[in-house]
Length: 106
Ligand SMILES: [Zn+2]
Image (cartoon, rainbow, N blue to C red; front, side, top):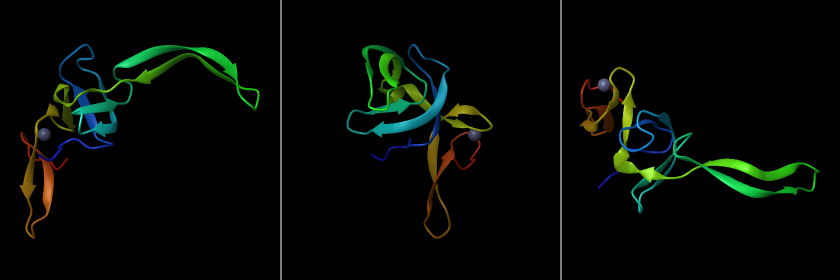
């Protein structure tokens, strides 16, 4: 099965606690069927504050995205919003990813 969502895609969360949130895909974890989406499912971590070699502070309260299930996100079509993606074979055999609703190349 080929994954329809890849790194850099704009997606919208269609289920779960972050419903309606949009962001760019930072990472796809195919084996876990999960994706990491910018600004979505952020978890707060409290780390001990330490001073690095340049004298700056590190740690404290940090926000980091946690992966969410691939089935909870949908690709965003510029015209329709969250949509299902399909494929179209162009002349010459090139496979392009398209919006199932309006046919726009995604
Ligand atoms: Zn569309």
